[in-house]
Image 1 (cartoon, rainbow, N blue to C red):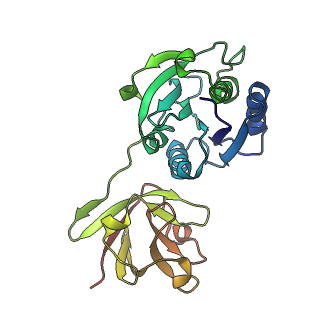
Image 2: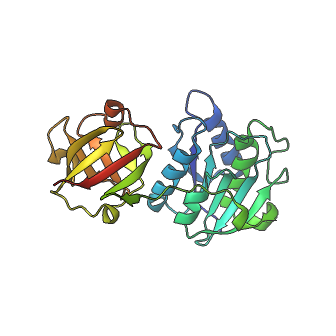
Length: 267
């Protein structure tokens, strides 16, 4: 089935011509397709952040082919992929975990192929820019209705590389969660849901990072506390976040992705 849209995410940034060149390749093949530039400011080579942003945003995207290029292993033995999901959507990009969370969001991978130089790539594929020469043309052809099976040799979906997010752990009367994302405002997103935290707005929590602990209110919005005050809330993607109203919690407390944050009820 043809698609009117391609959703495009990468770590290319806008300083170079990489994003624009990929647009040009797509439009040369499928001029009627609209390209949604979801994000090109992923920190270079940060596969997990790219995977999280892609999965978080897909429920708000129109039906589209999804093109993801965060590819530190470009030109190596990692497989270039196209995936059909159970919802009939297509994902195109490297087999390094970048597409895995999005595939789950779309009902799971139903079929996958390993891409190769073909009539559906550019005539010459450069090992340092497969985003232009392989992934972009394949996404364009899929958007025009080319069947997945025409694009390459089948790959068992169970063999695809997956990103596994560490689950929260309950121990010693507290719940420990992992920082999975820090946005540009310094808000600290955790792999923890409101149900798992078992807290209600208006209650207080003791939040710990390393040797530091703070008493923090659980609120519904940033404005429920004064500027520069700490807060815990359920964010727009239904994850628990630790933040500072009009401040940068990550910088203030030197929190990084992968750190552990602990929560317990305030006595």
